[in-house]
Amino acid sequence: MEPNNDSKNATAQLDILANDFANASPTETWTAIVTRALIGLGKNAKLHDLYGVIERHPKTNGREHWQAKVRQVLQRSGAFVRVEPSRWSFASLYSAAELVAFAAAKAKAPKSETKR
Image 1 (cartoon, rainbow, N blue to C red):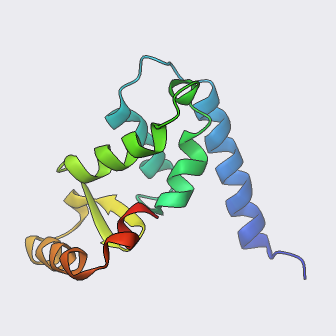
Image 2 (cartoon, one colour; image 1 turned 180 degrees about the vertical axis):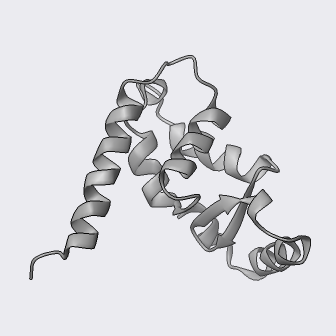
C-alpha cells in the first residue's frame, strides 16, 4: 500500500526541516534547538519526531547523550509540557487547568513512558 499525499507531504516537510537543522549553528542553545524543532513540527510533536529532526543538528555530532539533553530541556524548562506519553508541546498554548491535568496524568504514568 502506498502512502497517501498527506503522509508524503509530511515526510517532505520533515526532510526540509531536518536539512535546515543540518546547516544550523553549533553554538545554538539546546533550548533554542528544541524550540525550533517543536515549532517546525507544528507546535505539538512526538519525542521520536523531535529526535528525528534534532539528530541532524551539528550540536549532536560526537555527543553520545544528546537525546537525554533534549529530554532534560523538555522536562526542566517551563516552556514545554508533556501533553500525552511521548508527546510534547508549548505550555503557553494551554490553560492553567489543562497544565494541571497534564501534570496529574504524567504523575500517574508508569516511569517507562517518560523516555519514549
